[in-house]
Amino acid sequence: MGKKQRAVSKRDIIMSIVRNKPDDIELSHAQIEFVINAFLDEIIKRVCKGDKVVIKFFGTFKKIKCKARKYVTPTGKTGHAAPVNKMTFTQSVTVANKFNE
Image (cartoon, rainbow, N blue to C red; front, side, top):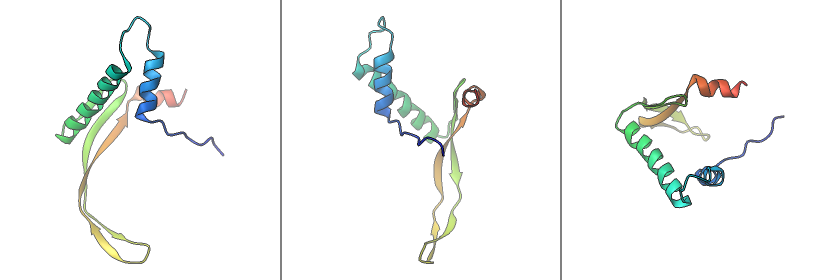
């Protein structure tokens, strides 16, 4: 059986950037955190508006509309779920190749 995957938080990523940034780059932890949060907020804002966000050599974020659907609970009751919007991510070929090296 494979190794269990560890969940990496946004905080973990920020701390890794803080620890690994070059010494000649003068950015504080707070500044790095601000940039990461602003970057993610901008992606969410653009996708919510219906824009497709393409990050070259990384991937594409876009909004999709999921249709209303019927469901059955474990007790056998049926219901209807309203249509919802979701954000999807499609990895670039560059990223896909990294997984197969």
